[in-house]
Length: 276
Ligand SMILES: O=C(O)CCC(=O)C(=O)O
Image (cartoon, rainbow, N blue to C red; front, side, top):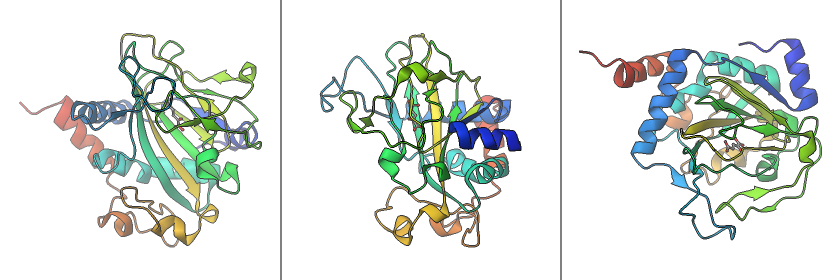
């Protein structure tokens, strides 16, 4: 799972890196089952609108939960997993903070894509290569179900963004799509892409749902003290590594570091292999 020097160089040049099979079968099954639970409980919200950015759609669905960590101890534990910290530190380190987590779920047939955008149009960090998304293919992500597309070597230019009429809060840009690369991943694979990389997902034309789980990480040198203390109700930003990291205790009041394997085992026991 550790990115090689060549992969790190690719991330810094092209602005993204796909890592198939980053999560194993048990980890992937746990995420699938837990996200199904969140959907079952109606925690996800349809952000799709009818072109005016306001009227919620009855025919298209772009289901989101942001942040999700309050509703799932599994999702809360994931960014503290050693292999996640190792990969993210090598890509953007040295001192890593979790910026955000969110679920994007596209139901079969009605699932709608997320329009082209650069995350830094929202986040506005000084060095867009020092923040990265880790987008997890929770289910197999294919062309037919609208997997992620990215524009290589485009991270350095901040594109103009305007409101996306097909979402109640998103903004969008219009990059040169002829340069886009489509990233297909089996469930459990991940795509890292830096905050400057233009990216988009497509509609889900298949009969089965597809979810992506995105974590955004940034290097502490891209933050100010305000970043940790202002308007953070509902969205803790734990320092994951570095001298001020507390394993989640400061942000959550409990030590989260080291709980990933137990969370995966618990989810597998609860959802997938219930005791007889
Ligand atoms: O999965 C999606 O539809 C979009 C994900 C995304 O835009 C992101 O993770 O920044």
